[in-house]
Image (cartoon, rainbow, N blue to C red):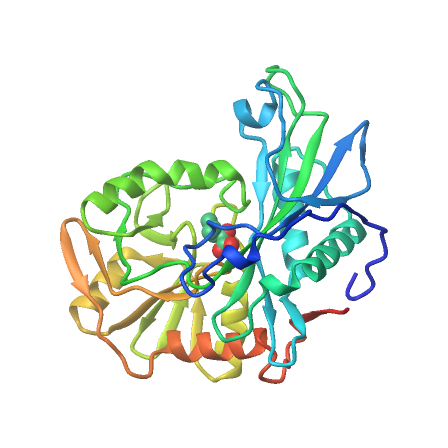
Amino acid sequence: MRNDASVKIDIEKAPTSKINSVDFENLTFGHIFTDHMMVCDYDNGNWKAPKIVPYGPIQLDPSAKVFHYGQAVFEGMKAYCDDNDKIWMFRPEENLQRINKSSKRMAIPEFPEESFFSALEELLKLEKDWIKKGFGNSLYIRPFVIATEAGVLASPASQYKFMIICSPAKSYYTGEVRVQFSEHYSRAADGGVGFAKAAGNYGAQFYPTNLAKEAGFQQIIWTDANSHEYLEEAGTMNIFFRIKDKLITAPTNDRILDGITRKSILALAEANNIDCEVKRVPVKEIVEAAKASELKEIFGTGTAAVINPIQGFSYKGESFELPQLENSYASLLKNKLMRIQYNIDEDIFGWRYEVKE
Ligand code: COI
């Protein structure tokens, strides 16, 4: 429902704002939250009216199903402020569609479009001062749904909360990122929930990622669970490889997140005459290309990370460094994408969504 949000939202304003205590130049990703949040309850088969309330703790019964069975899904979105103080989002209808797709897989009731856009736009208007101008500044928006019904019967809950919280953001990764190609652990399996933004998909990565960190790598690139021979995604990012002048990325399926940045990059690459191929990516092909100095770039794409270049990777104990390119596809495509997001370039794709006063 683009620019036609129509559900009346109850707003309880925070008595004071924390904004003056925030150092916007030195933000750790996802650490500080704005003054308000959106809350909407589901009960008796219906989503109730969404409310905006002061940001703060919520009370849940210790037996709430989210704690026991992980019935929880989330999204990541961003809002941007242009030089004329206008606020923009990027393809937000895709996030709503995806959270509802994730919800369906986790037996969570889908959330209505009108409530989503009305509540989100009201929240962003209220938090406008937190959306700083300037390339690279944004407000990270985290919608999520949790099962709140009390009781440990292993079945879908009958009560849920849909919430939206917001956090001012700069970059997700700081410093260089080197990755390990997974040889043992898996993120997702056929028929599973890998395509969904289910909370457990992320928690399950923490232990293997800690092991990779101890070995000097910031992230893991997950391989397919059956053979570990194909590269799939990086868990917080989809992943692209550049061999000579061609970009390659894995097709989305029930194991891989259908990234909004991923599909935007594919469209931008095509519009800029960059040769792209969506196909399964054999580890062997990437290792051989690296050995032949034909592997020019690896980069990850995601809402939080935008486009993050990978400096090197390791596989079966062998480490490879990637060249430092002056005109990388990663920086070219990141710039093109951000110029659309920040309302600098014409948006030929119709991706921008203005949050009107
Ligand atoms: C995002 O890019 O918004 C994500 O959901 C990744 C997240 C785990 C930070």
